[in-house]
Length: 292
Image (tube, rainbow, N blue to C red; front, side, top):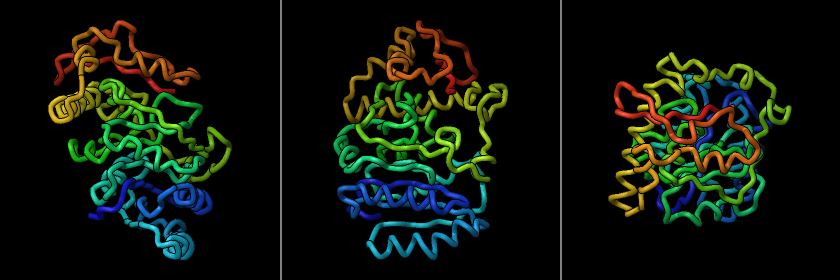
């Protein structure tokens, strides 16, 4: 493992060339210390377009600038298992912070890396300013210890929602002053291609045990929250009163999520009095908000 890396970006990509170039160029061009940033890329073995572009164009660009990178090939898992690409890359990453990046993301703020490193001594889920200030961390920025404690960043495809809801329950969600454009078709009208069209989502069918809002997935999120809370309380000596009150029914877990939803991008929130519902494996599961 390298010891001179501050931030590791994890980028799973398929079939994109121009957008991928922009996603990669902007992170290095706008970093104050690009030598302390590393990029991991995940390609499907059958992605001739993406791999060819990497080998003949993007990789030479990075090598000429002595940038840090690792490219990995996977048997195709699809968008529905996007988290598995990122978790696999995270296993090899060296940075103090792990960032889930996209091949349609555009960094827009000079010195973005130093905004992240300003929190190097604090355990937070950091959030870029994107999606019209969506209250989730759309491109999650997690401390490496998060991955080490749980063995993954997210066990579910809906990675941004997964870690954001945990961070709100733990009261460790933090926006940083860094702008990122998500150049996705339904947001900007750009990049309407097979990669976008074939996106499959594990949301909207709560009776499916793999659905984000199924009882089994909520239980898993809450168990992981408890692990993170134990570390924060015992090792970092954080005040966990907010989290304890959430599971005692005295605190609305989504209070700060609602405060951060300045453009009303969430369809619904949990009951303001933080009602609870019984579940199979956790004594009391918090009702969770549904994203738009």
